[in-house]
Length: 132
Ligand code: HEC
Image 1 (tube, helix red, strand yellow):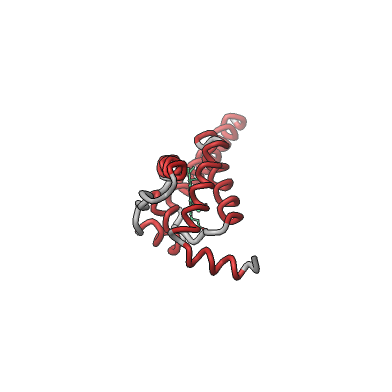
Image 2 (spheres, protein in one colour; image 1 turned 90 degrees about the vertical axis):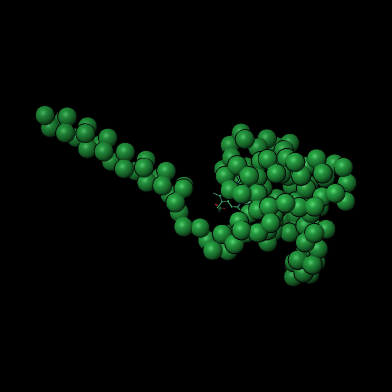
């Protein structure tokens, strides 16, 4: 009887922790800064970008819109190569096999090109701040 009770208690605890983990993933209040990115434009005009970058953009659009809108990735404040490297890796870790290393590289190439072009002012300012 005592043993049955402790088994039940263990299952209840595991259940509560599991539910809490699921809720944390979905309902964690979003940083207001990140929420603002989500509300910005969800498209980039890539018509003047080189063909290879345009095809990388397609990978970016599909892979970076799975868990949040692609607007988050479009309107964020990352610009420099090392910022993108760190963040694409972070997103790849979250995504498991959904983003392959080759796709991660395409996304990185797109994000850096786009930062130097569309976000040029931000890119130049950050470069200067970094003393590069
Ligand atoms: C597996 C789910 C998942 C995928 C796929 C994903 N993200 Fe995210 N992303 C998140 C979560 C969760 C957050 C919330 C903040 C955090 O944990 O960094 C986030 C936050 C962000 C932010 C805001 C970071 C900040 O602090 O300003 C950016 C930018 C971003 N993601 C870009 C991307 C890009 C680019 C891709 C495609 C390579 C991508 N995400 C793919 C889950 C994902």
